[in-house]
Length: 140
Image (tube, rainbow, N blue to C red; front, side, top):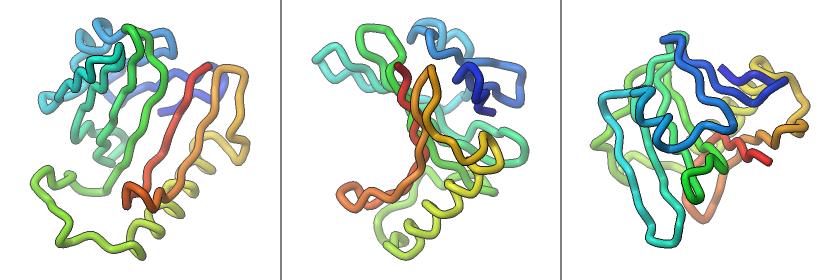
């Protein structure tokens, strides 16, 4: 999915998101029937696609654009379809920390242990402020 040489994201459907992909181009790719756009009014736009099936896993990805230019991507994945109606009742810090380990192990297999590249940085971590774990990609 992540090309460590270029930073491009390739999806099981043969669709590719490049570090220079614009918001308009991402919308045209149509990664998922379930998506939403958040216009923040400060030149930032969040575009989220949900339950994108890649290599047997379901991904929930948020692309962060500044003035139509892709800045970063944050995502999670699960072996089964991600419940879009879940709430905080099923949350636990222990599970989120376990997810951070799972995501780091996935990155190790996907791109190796190096996380800094000429095109940007990749990481996986637990964020205690948001209460969640995710994988992040920041483009230069």
